[in-house]
Length: 193
Length: 218
Ligand SMILES: NC(=O)c1ccc[n+]([C@@H]2O[C@H](COP(=O)([O-])OP(=O)(O)OC[C@H]3O[C@@H](n4cnc5c(N)ncnc54)[C@H](OP(=O)(O)O)[C@@H]3O)[C@@H](O)[C@H]2O)c1
Image (cartoon, rainbow over all chains, first blue to last red; front, top):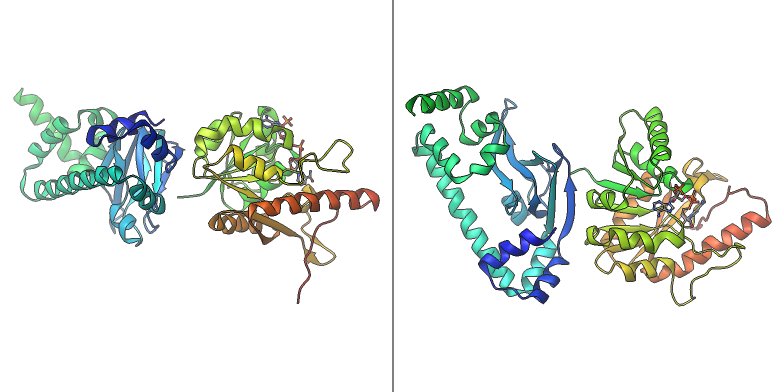
């Protein structure tokens, strides 16, 4: 249940066994079934969710009822509505499970206590948030300036696993294009080969 | 996120009353226990009354507790620790409700040491969970008849975690009873003795389980 979390933390900071044993007590183990929500638009995002197993997506819905996927998450990743989590304001996005999943939830108050109890964890989260922020910035700039075909190829390269696990329509939504455009891109790419 | 509640021992007298009322109130309820056929019967009965109920049956206490946000142990006192052992790894940070009364065989005394209670023993086994005492002073019939002599039956709630007291008080209210926050978990010693007294009174006066505690105040 905690192995992947431990590996992920150890990749970035040196935590002793005792420190990790203490850290574990701050996390709420939670299983969710496919299609269940862990956050619905308008709710306050109470926790950061670490994914031990499974796949989830974070998305928003526009006035036409169209879903726009902001990000996916698989084993070893964190998922949350960071804006709502940090500010305590209602979330503008939802998170649900694409597969049956196992999570480790870190509520805001536990997050604060954990960072205070183990400063190395605070350092871990600083690195994590820096990476999250730079990935988000890159995603925004790509969306504005990089052609869809190239964004699709980048996606395949960066997230080979997600490509296998998520329906094409959701990948299209993540790329900000229609499913029709995505299949056209895939067809063009296949012909180029 | 919809709150998911696991009722372990859901097919029992207390478990079925609590589970039915919570399902009716719109919670997602996981009916857990040993006997899958009893649980299936219960889920049919709940759906007959309330077709929109979001319920599932599970024969594994650990699986149910892992999926749940709140766990209610509606099992005999003698089984509480055994179940706590099974679910311990998946209830960190979660509310675990103890409803038990550690009665002796003759129903005229408690088997616990006066310096502790069933709920405190449970809390010792689950140091990373928020153990709450609730529902132990009400008879199972109270979920079907919650008003006696024109008054709504009280149901006391005790825990060392204030937020947990308020969350469980809301659950109590949703089962149709009047929640009364009673203090820290050590108050369970009193609450378990109050249940014993109520049982004695019910036996001596032939109340047939149609009795409950009510604190009167202006
Ligand atoms: N009855 C009351 O009016 C009342 C009032 C206040 C408090 N309480 C307390 O509530 C608790 C339940 O009492 P009850 O009267 O509802 O008893 P009950 O009708 O005998 O129900 C107990 C339930 O627990 C299940 N169970 C037993 N061992 C289990 C295990 N290892 N794993 C999973 N499930 C298990 C039983 O399953 P099986 O049926 O398959 O054996 C049964 O469904 C007790 O602690 C009691 O002190 C009762």
